Length: 209
Image (cartoon, rainbow, N blue to C red; front, side, top):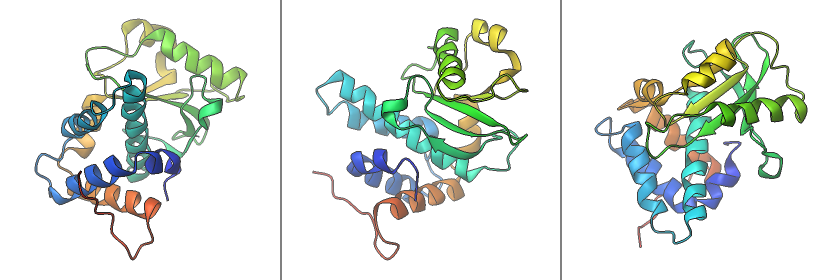
């Protein structure tokens, strides 16, 4: 069961429909870009812009947990034991995990509808401050202290300059390289959603109304 189960249950219909659809695509147009397009189709049905952004962000957080679970030993990913931070405690840290050295680290997930809108230094500075002062995470110790999972192309130059090797950026391109038309990944994703929502003997087909 996914630790982002609250998000999955909150967005039951888009989770069911999107992940089943991508599993059934059998490696054809089962891409990260296509996934983001499907999320946006559901978001624009909501009248409240704040709720639209919440759905987009929550769905990316769900995908991030599935992604981390699918590639635990991949050096390009390098994160295990991902655990989301409860919303009332989220002041800039979306989750925690352990890096390749086994050190506790912070995770920030950033949705960008426009991938050229890069993740900024102030955003990650907020993550660093919250992680150190509120969560007592040892971000000063070594590299890869903050993992950034984002649909943006990258982080800004200022962010790289100040944060240096403390940030591990999983950008749009890296995510695409791992999951685009990857049949095994989308099968795994569907099973994770299914096991979170229903007993293993059931399926999660939902009709669109």
